[in-house]
Image (tube, rainbow, N blue to C red; front, side, top):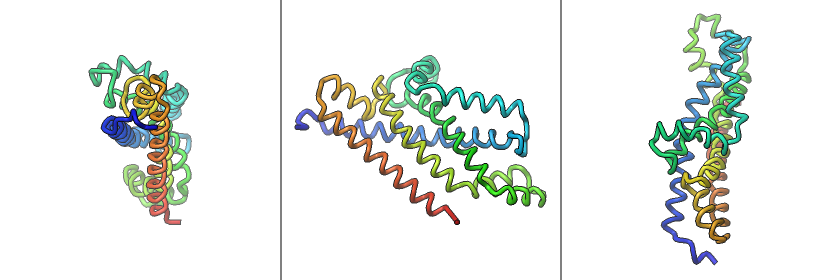
Length: 218
């Protein structure tokens, strides 16, 4: 058992999975936060109330959330090839990972912002606070525990996405499990990759829970 596993290939696949997850998570956090703020601020009770703009942003978010990730990868091949210069490898998976995850996180951001006490927001407005001040001094700090919990959930989804991307040549543990394990009927490799992916999920969940707990002032 496990005789066919090359430790250097296994380590490289693990590194690629972490690389794709962490870089995509950073991009997802930035883009998702922007989408969530736009959804919240342009809603009917928002500071930038704008029904038409809110509808457009909401529609874009819903469309990309509805597309299965594996199909989204195929749809983004021309864009990925233009942007990265290739459709294979960890870097080539990043556009699809970010575009596939950001709308999901954007909705979580919107929900987190809606949980902020409106009285606090109204008090800040009554004191003459600018929109930028309300966003960075009230909304984001007050919703930070929920935002961290949301990005933790998104990170776990991203890990699963990297495995799917790996099956079509993005690298990582998904690619190693599929090409070196499943395609060669070596299920020891598949099993080990699965175990390690589960461990990575637990690591991200553990870190996310600790940060969210420390930031929760309740």
